[in-house]
Length: 134
Image (cartoon, rainbow, N blue to C red; front, side, top):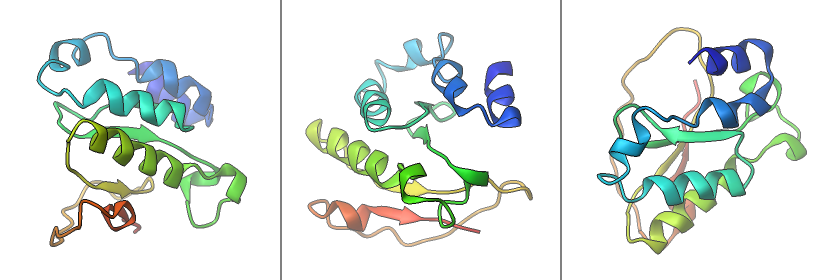
């Protein structure tokens, strides 16, 4: 956890790969979440700084970034979120694991509930990628 905090505090995003390699709970949960390893590998292979099980799962989180985490203001060369999102969906589809990708940015006011109606065509990946911005 310390390296994860240090990576964000110093903006040294290259540390996120090591910081997200969880040896405590991911190996035990991997048998329950067959999508875990393929999605993490897909995210890393497509340019994410790090990826891991989000909480107890089943969600997987990947970290991409640029200046201040604002995906709208970044240069195209800094942005990897769509490549990672597409890789997530391709890997999930390959193992018949339906889902969506939410692309978010860091916020300072803490967590809150976002309500939305989930409706998508599993054959159209771009309809399964959503930007959730503050």
